[in-house]
Length: 296
Image (cartoon, helix red, strand yellow):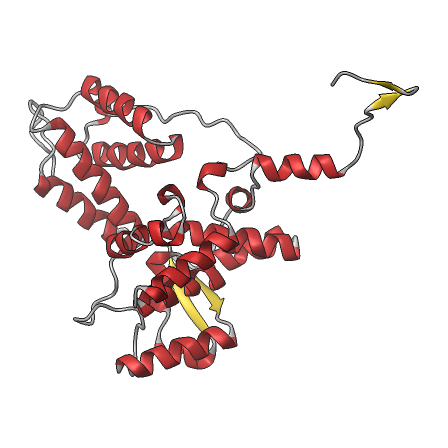
């Protein structure tokens, strides 16, 4: 049976968060999802500072998040705490998600260009961080999630494909010949004869937070805004580049491991400035009429 907290006082503790995350893992939630929920719950615990939780304090936290983060991020945090509340039967504390308006354009301030990606790879190499340089190229050339890097193994590089198990679905991720050569040469230099290629010095799988921190440190040297530098943006760049070349949304959804093609559409959104350039190329604007200039 689930552990039910004291009905009189609802205090978010490290132990209750840990128990909830263990339960999530037992429900076969992905490691990435569990870690994300853990992070948001710890942030909420820090915000409450041992105070009794009620809907009022949750609404205050929601308002705080709205002032700090994008709506999608806010809803991710709310999903974590609402799930926690259901687990402990604190349904009266749950709050509604933000309503997200559908925009045909992506956030230009967070769109990573191919040139910026290349500069990040070069910056990693110039810093002597070969592992990070290869990691960036692996994600961007295959479209895998950072949580799926454990499936990029020596064995996978030898046969040119990785069998990825994520969110209860197993899909095949193809690795290009050039990437496989780079991965195997790197593994040989590091003495990695089998198993995961991207590991720490102690042999553990790389942690998402470590990769994030290493990537952010490249910003100044690469000349890339820090808001654009995060692992998932490499997956977005892969999706946009693939879609521009193939225009096959259904196949892209399969490659990315999306159940719903509408999720894939989010990855292929272009920036407003790019769309404006496309409109200008249409040549449908008349600047003169009967030799009289129009005021536009």
